[in-house]
Image (cartoon, rainbow, N blue to C red; front, side, top):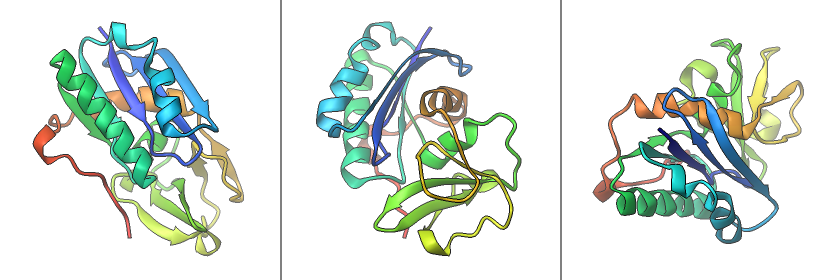
Amino acid sequence: MTVLAIDTSSRSRVVAVAATADGALIDSAVIGGDAVAASLPRALGGMLGAVDIAVVVVIGPGTYTGVRAGMAAALGIAHARHLPLYGVGSLEVVACGEPGAGVDDWVIADAGRGALYVARLADAAAPSRVPRLGFDAAGARVLSTDSIDVAGLILVDPARALARAVPLALSRPALDPAGLGALYVD
């Protein structure tokens, strides 16, 4: 029983994982440095045959093109296989990646143009966009799946984090394909 999860929200990589419904990683592909259009088919290629429960997609915040490409691919796979489609936020994925993280830790992602998406771990579903130079963790731990020049950054494995986010996504109502929209943070 396998769930396919897709994350194209990052500026630096595409992540696809096959995972169990309880978040155990079965297979993964992390491809960096290429355009989403080239990376996503390669990342998904070997995992499509095993998907039989659901499809999970990261809904943002993230890059405009990346989030939309991931959502389109996930919707297409879910539709073709008659599977439900679930969404999860990009900072929620980071929050799931470090099991020992505390509620006061920060989860962050690169927002481009000198900015970050940030949230306290407990509020990962409601991120804010802040200038990178204005971000102060005030001594708290800072977690990210992106390699960002921030003091005290703890890098989280993007594939394990995405797999661990599967149970969170599956605990929510399935997305309505007619009303899909990406999450943007001002």
